[in-house]
Image 1 (spheres, helix red, strand yellow):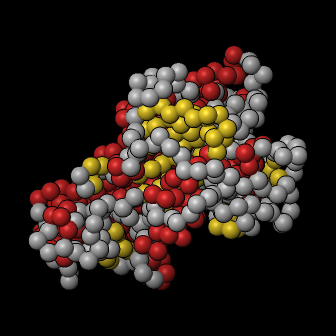
Image 2 (cartoon, one colour):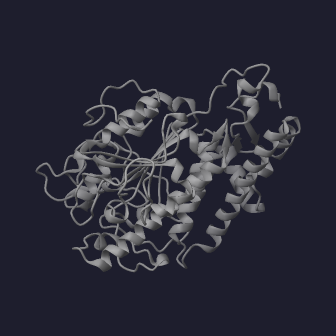
Image 3 (cartoon, one colour):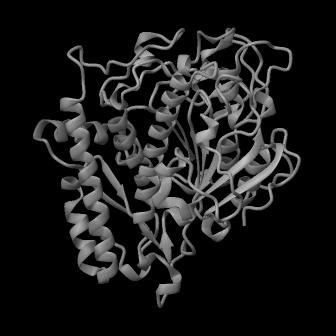
Length: 462
């Protein structure tokens, strides 16, 4: 090892055959804690994330009645109770690009296509798709070169780039919310094992394949390949950093074990998860192999990957779709046997609204799992969650009305001290959601005066 703890870089990797394990932020990487500052030191980096849930929300179970810091946790938000001080509920925000504007039906596809772009997508189910550039990709232009991955696009249902998914709208709109260019949707990674391999791959494809083959043959951990490097580093670290390194390596091994369990136990007899196939999506795209059959296990493993990606500064920007637009998945593991999309057209049925609320709570609980993981990871003078700004919500408010105003939007994290979390902020209904994105872009260093249909920088967050 050529690095000593007094000059350890944030870019330092534990290396082995086909394996490169990035380190979390250690105290010895901070110039304020060193006698000699490192060349790439400074405060912990700011991370940005976007998490999308489909089919709107049962709004009476979402929206707090009180504003400010004394807001009460509604039934859906109750799933986030342990992280109440790290969330801000933002009411009144609107996504005008998801409205019809003369194009008729297709609110679900538009709600996803417009969610991060603020644009109104061209109505087509052919190759002539046209959308805007998404906020995550704009931010990636400014900070993406500082990390191994400029951005990560993730989800629990695979993307498609063709087909008719919603009233004449292409499946490209319904299954992708990150857009690099007006005609370039970014496909999602849905397999937690594949994402794990991407995060810890070596420098060459040949080495990575060889290491993967050896791991599978001898049931080795990736940590076996970097054990010598890790042992040498551990011996020279101060005790606080030794503890951080131990906890981090333990978390990697824990995820590996659960991935192995998912691959052994989570598949159907046909070898693929028994997921319903959305209309217009080819069979091979909607049923990826190697993921757990239970949505909660699948989601939690992907959230573990998100935490590792942020912790190692492998990326600072990511997006995540729980399911694709208009998903009619049933949630049998929580006792909901009817399809989500069908339930969202509730017609004021008390039964259907109660079932929707259960699904909303399920998604919130899965998101809370991520927030709790991030909060447990110590970084700088706080937690990893303190250095994140993560949007959670939907581009539809009430699924029965298909309205795109007063959206269910939540902002999690402390934004590196920029966000006064733990409050409910009620904006004038019709305030562009893109105002929030413009504010976030500026925090990431993007020099922009407008984004989408923004009318200014969103106030009241700090």
